[in-house]
Length: 495
Image 1 (cartoon, rainbow, N blue to C red):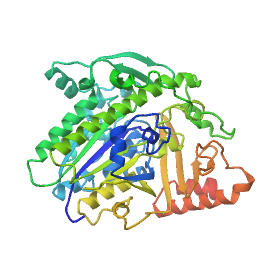
Image 2 (image 1 turned 180 degrees about the vertical axis):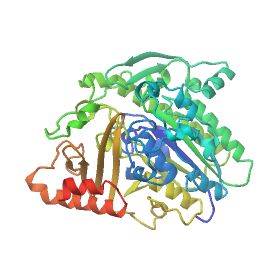
Image 3 (image 1 turned 30 degrees about the vertical axis):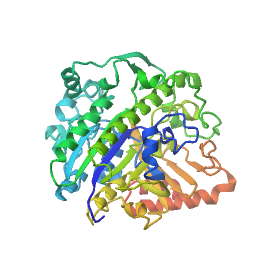
Image 4 (image 1 turned 180 degrees about the horizontal axis):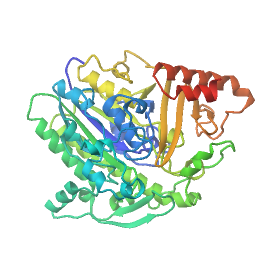
């Protein structure tokens, strides 16, 4: 682009793309601000995360690399992670933008490093991992945004909704306010918790993050150089804390079962049971879904506050706005699956992606396969760099209409979560999906006739040639992308 625009990247956490009406005709979740933004954006229908887990996906956004190459294979300080703290490098998004003269800001969820002191005090680490000598801790190599060049906020670790941090508590105290979270429900699955924020919208972490974003942009606007700001919400990831003002909109709303809540073929991977709820009855999920929707509607409202600010400051027209999520969420699909990882269904691998070019006023829709690494490359391309390609490729030519696609296949990887190490690769090709599950049964779905991925065709006699075609495509992708899982994959599936 000839004139370098400001860039605003808004990232949610664990958001199902069907919470946006542009992706779901039912429109059960109300997001009028993002609907309006979509009407002025390019909407990607086939955008995928590099990994359906927070840390790996977020590291891909900052490095432009697949998890197998940046080494953050699962959440920080979980078993199976090779790198616990995102290393500072000239190739990081922040350092490259900084070198190009951009002012760079960051607020909200990081989850790419806990900070050494934070980890040493972590009861989970002490109880389950004992005195593991993490190399990063030995070198005091804490990774937080301001250590890699960003102006803004350091919120180390996972954050558990963001309400635990002293900066947020100090902000509330300065306003003479406090946050009250009441009517908490929990227990149907290990990590499930929902609650009602009864103290007002201006006591929420989402309100605070928008205020911080405005402060950062205000400071940058005093300088001539363009800016890049990344706003990262902790929601709608659990804990599903939703303000009364938005929860009221869903209290009486009918929540019908997902189209793929029931009806699975019997030949599904056994590993999926790790993420199944204690009680899989649909009624048990409805309260959590209501809080999840209300949380997302609140995030939508807060994004509206930031967009209005940009318009008031006459910054909106010259700002490229990207909206996406790190990965999706399950919430009861396939007979009670919860959270993410271990399974590779569309609800957790396919992500929302809206990109509004400066001065864009109408919607275009694209079916091209794009992924998290491509977002990194696109941001650098927009910033005026020519050497932007790493594992991803810039989709700016798709935004401008010069190209219709980047690739024929797209692959999402996973290496396990928590204390489970489990290698997976999911390949999309046309309307087909193939999932390699090392140590379990593979999966094959035809999304055009089975969008809910209910019927696993992997052993169906009519689709053996198709299975072999997709397995070969995955092998070729592994070779082209230096995937070290290639050797085991060939041994198990391609001999």
